[in-house]
Length: 159
Image (cartoon, rainbow, N blue to C red; front, side, top):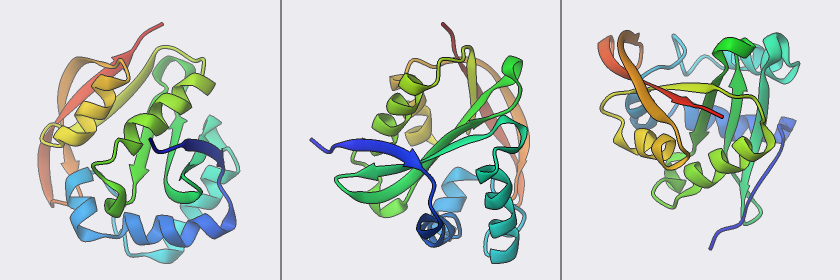
């Protein structure tokens, strides 16, 4: 069994995060990405704001068996707190996203928590379901990684 831990984001994590978040295959699956996932300056500015905790953002690096494999966090107001996570594509299919999100939920008492996923991102939807989130609605949104509007699933984790 892979051991998961969460820790504060460190400078050395950012090159990995950038590589993963600019991977065309991964961004297509995630669908909702920055305007230009290959813009390193925009990425660095975004992560500087996240790490400063702007707007109540809390981000954690996901470590599996001693290696950085992704990040998990939450943002938004107390009445619309959203979770987010990203696991590097080389680490998909090992249950790491589920384990990371569970660990994050254990240290995050705020409820309800919400999330959104591309309707066809079955892996992410399954992670959320395994962690107790239930479908509460649907929406459509512009997916930059796909260049079109797509269906989204809205999920909520209650008390």
